[in-house]
Length: 370
Image (cartoon, rainbow, N blue to C red; front, side, top):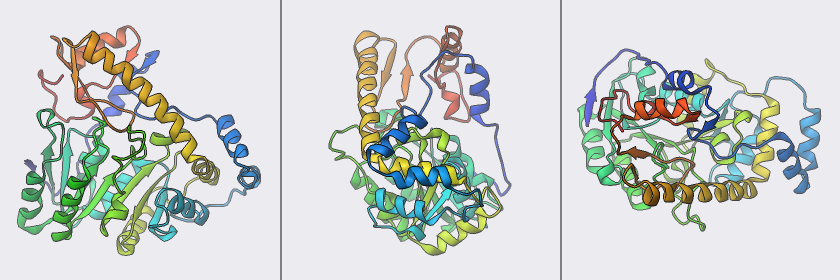
């Protein structure tokens, strides 16, 4: 691992700010990382098809009072039942206005007071940098995921990182299925990682926004949620990625340890504590039709993945390579040509096509970044 030690709060420029500036005028987007978005008429139709007129009536007649901090009880119960099959209860779920705020809240609560954190690169900016935003953080240990290893999590490096640093490493951020690669670790790897973290009393925040989008038809590669698998595990989820409910702006954190939940609530009070009641009801509508929505989105993902496989592995294999993804709506593709990823992005933008170059996932991009 590479080590960065700091006790100050650091916030780098958001990669999305630069990306939107460079690709905002593109007609064709190959850079969206969510499933096919829902529409409100589609959501209403699906809800009516399931005879959930109670939800339709609630949406039309709800008042505009503040909702409780952390989300209304009915939504949290639905999340516990549909997503966690009642292994967790409503008291183990905190609702946020999207997944981004949820990730930030978890790091601000858990990475403070000298705590050192383990993160994995390349990765989504908030899963790599958010511990550095916490007050009096103990810095981060970055563990690199490498293409020559199939982008796997190196458990030996995890053991070194957690057992070193004078026993100050008490927070680890994972992203499974992994963004940007769409790669899912094995159950054996997850179990061993949890064992190592349990031995050191280390909290694990797992960004699970692509969970439920496993590509195998049977879902046989699906991992248990971190919140269900580990007593100090926190699962972060958003409506946007699996279900395409981007505009609903509902996300949540789930954790079995109520002392951790209380820490999260204390931080949440100083952020966006309440979500929209209309969004909550839309979220309940999505959960009522979850199986159907996921089935449709996965059919689209599998079709697009096969088109991309043909493009990369058959038609243009001298120009592109990849580790074929097995989960999520994303893929990490290497350009084998003479340009950097930024060069390729610039040329594609000129003809109206948007991609995410390497700078979206690594903080220092050199000429070898493809």
